[in-house]
Each structure stands twice: as C-alpha cells, then as structure tokens.
Length: 395
Length: 83
Ligand SMILES: Cc1cc2nc3c(=O)[nH]c(=O)nc-3n(C[C@H](O)[C@H](O)[C@H](O)COP(=O)(O)OP(=O)(O)OC[C@H]3O[C@@H](n4cnc5c(N)ncnc54)[C@H](O)[C@@H]3O)c2cc1C
Image (cartoon, rainbow over all chains, first blue to last red; front, side, top):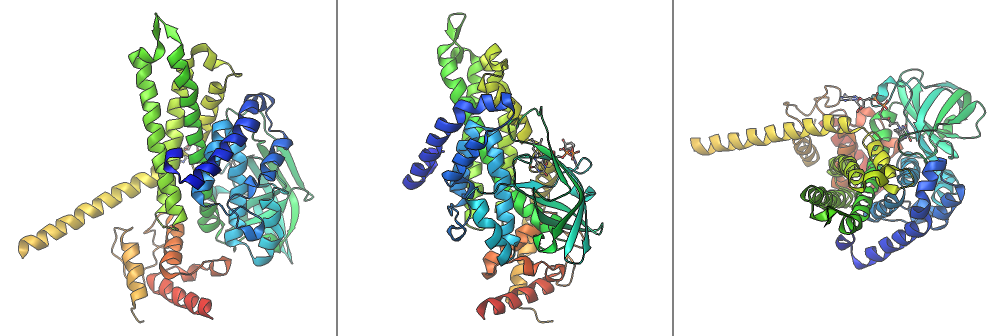
C-alpha cells in the first residue's frame, strides 16, 4: 500500500500505523476475549480526529479524501476488525446526513459526530430482513409532527455503544424511510449480542422499538427513498471500509506468517522451503497486491466522483473479503496449533475474515449484481462489434 | 418535447447500461431496465457531468423516471444553482 501513496499520504499513513501499533494491535486479542472495545479506545480515536475522517472541516472533520480514509481503515483493520466496524458504521451515518440531511440536521449532528462526542450506528437488518430489505417490518406512523416507531433491528454494529441510530423502516407500511433515533428515546431498549464468530468486540446489539416517538424533523431524506437512495449511498462507504479493513487483515496474515515460515523448521527445513507452504505465501502476497490495486482504483474513482466508483467499490469489497477468508484459513494452517488458540491473532483473523463476507451486502448479493452486469456488458460489446463488422462488410 | 444535448448525453450514458431498446419517455426504473444500484450511479453521473449537487430536495421519482424527465430536472437544477 505504502508504495502507491504520495510522500504526504505516506506520512499520514505512517501516523495511522503508529496509532494502531501503540493502542490497537497489542490489545485486540484481549478485546475479543472480553467481547468489548473499551470506551477509552473510542475516545483516543476521537481525540486523533479519526472519527471525523471524511467529514468536511466546516463540521470539524478532517476532510480526508477517500484514499486517505481507505488508508486509515486499512491500518485499523490490520490491528482490529472489530474496531474497524466503528469507523464503518459511524462514517455511514455521517455521510448519510451530509448527503441527505437538511442544513439544520447537518449543523445539529455533524460537529458532534465528527468530533466523536456522539457515536452513530446504522440499523437496517431485522430478524426477517437481511439481504432483502424490502421485507423490513419496522414501522413509522406519523402523528402530527411526530413519528411513532415500532419494530426490531438486529446485528447492529456498535449498537450497544452508539448514541444515535439511523433506523430504516416503512412509513405507514409502504414507503421506506430512515430517521435518526437518539439512544435515550423512551421505548427503545438495547440488548447487547454476545458470542459472535467475528466482530466479537464490536458491541453488536438488538434494538427494540416500542412506541418510540421522534420528531418528523429527524427524517433523513424523503419518504420512499430510504432503500433506493439513502441505503445504497451509505453502503458504498461501508464497502470502502470493509474492502480496506479486509486489506489490513490480509496484510496482517502475511506479516504474521512471513517471519514464522522463515524461522520455523520441520524435517530440518524451514517451512517456506516446503513447496505447499511457499504456494500459500505466494498466493497471499499476490492477492494482497491485487486487492490493494482494486481498492486504490475504487477510492480514486470515488475521489474523482466517477459513476464507476459504485462498481469498483463492490469489486474491491468482494475480492478482498474473499481473499481475506482464503488467506486467514491458510494462516491458521501455517501456524498449526498456535493458530488455533484464541490468544493468537491468527485465530481472530480467521473468525473476522468470514464475517467480512457477510456484511455490507453479502458476497452472494455482490455476485448477483456484478455477475449479471459483467455478462450483460460483454454481450453488448460483442453485439456492437458484430454490428460494426457487418457495416464494414456491406460497405 | 425538445431533444437537447442534455438528453443526448443522458441517453448515451443509460444506453451503456441497458440491453433493451428504450426512448426518451421510457420509464427506466419502473420498467426494470436497470439494477438497484443504478440510481446511485446515475445520480453521480448527473452530478459530475452537469455540475449539479443532488440533495434531499431533489428526491422525487418524477425527476428520474425517463430521459425527458431527467433532462428537465437537470436544466431546472442548473438554473437554480445559477441564481
Ligand atoms: C458481524 C455483523 C455485523 C453486522 N452489522 C450490521 C449493522 O451494523 N447494521 C445492520 O443493519 N446490519 C448489520 N449486520 C447484518 C448484515 O447486514 C446481514 O447479516 C446481511 O445483510 C445478510 O442478511 P442475513 O444475515 O439476514 O442473511 P440472509 O439475507 O437471510 O441470507 C442468508 C444467506 O443467503 C444468501 N442469499 C440471500 N439472498 C440471496 C440471493 N438472492 N442469491 C444468492 N444468495 C442469497 C446470503 O448471501 C447469505 O449467505 C451485521 C451482520 C454481522 C454478521
């Protein structure tokens, strides 16, 4: 990654890595075992200004471009995928407000969120609505200048630590809408979820809404647009976070296994000199490079405000999260029994990697969208070149 | 309905993403010509190509339903930004 950055980007990236190697990496296994990231760490991220990474300076953010945000999440993902989840959901909430919020909503929320004085989380999934969000049952009903909210949201990253939720539901049973719901709202109960496979320390929670009243001014965007515009716009930032955090995980696998295979001997030979192990390390290194390039292409497209960014970001998320699972599995294999113990980071990489294939649009949903798009595009290209050929022949 | 460069540019962009034939009045979303992510891609395209910024005030399906509707929306938006 470093080799692709300008000198000033390298200096910023170096600062991220320093932060992670001091405050994140040494504690990450313990956080997983205790199943929580301490609030001190969230405060440290806030003090560094990292929680407002992509927000404009007028709202107290850092105004980072997406490449720099990618570098930040890569560094955080190298240390702790659970902590990267905070950046992911918090950024999705802020970006949603920045894009679809009113001037008042931006002025009210963005300075607090960018400074990390308030933490945001995104609540879409329900027990019976995951990939298919149209199945959502969470309901909003308008009564004068208030909405009455009922329903349940599940698997909400940092749900047990957040101060405000962007909650998706349907207005009067039909129109998808999304509103900001403060955690202290009467009728909202938050139940932490324990014993996840990955994201163990990411404060997942179930949110139950029982006649929760919120002002209609808390709606983000307009009724009818929450699933077609607000959610996909937010998820694009989520996918950038997942792609780059998975890249950090891939680097972690290589940086853990590389030194080990050079030192560890079996049958009087260093592991790296066994062809099968060398094969695994080769694939790890090549996929790390390929994933880096896909990720960088994606954020460059996003920085250029290119419409291609949507697809490039999906490709980066898809490729990198799949590569993460493959190589974290191999990392456990390479480390042998050591990799099977939860006090060793490799066991954590293995558990977290799988989770990255499920969040922000599962990889099957990516296959559904990307596969069809690639096939259709190829067909169109072939048809066009045939038409051009025929035209040439008849001339 | 006048056919202007704006409509031509939009037609060209949408034609790169759909197989079916369509005209300037075809309801591209309603008729399922594009996938669920296309709304965001189209929005980004319009913002970049025509130098406009789409905000919550522009969330109205009538603005995006057909090439004619999008063309009119873009012109309205450009005029508003110039003011
Ligand atoms: C660690 C973690 C953190 C999360 N954090 C959040 C959060 O912060 N906010 C939030 O709202 N949600 C969150 N989620 C939920 C996540 O977004 C959903 O798990 C995800 O969208 C998939 O939904 P599901 O689990 O209901 O699976 P389902 O949608 O029931 O899918 C089950 C399986 O079927 C596959 N599948 C579904 N449809 C198709 C299809 N058409 N073709 C082929 N295969 C298909 C899926 O890929 C999956 O493998 C989190 C989940 C996890 C694991």
